Length: 106
Image 1 (cartoon, helix red, strand yellow):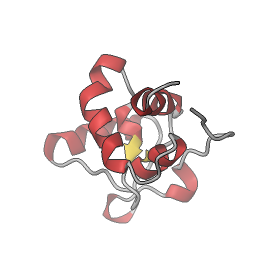
Image 2: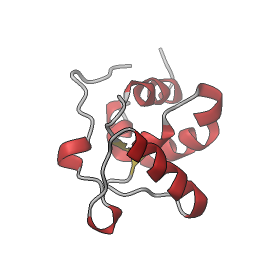
Image 3: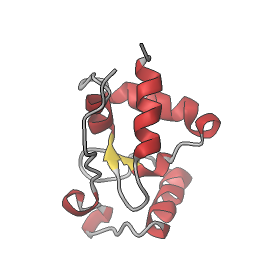
């Protein structure tokens, strides 16, 4: 049986270019809908090592959760992928939210 961390990493690796997913969405797909903060921890500790497309993960309000230089870097990477930002730098989740074809199982 795979661990929560392994499942989360696989899900994040599956997010296609030009789409985004929320921390909560990833947690839910991994089988723990209340574990959004764990997804943040996994991104923080595994993004470089696992070469995760970390820029594609945002908060449930359609915004980048990072501040400072991290915010600018994430926004720049998303813009290069074709993700556009609206008023107050919100991402239109109806347009850009990733919708996997089938749910993930452990």
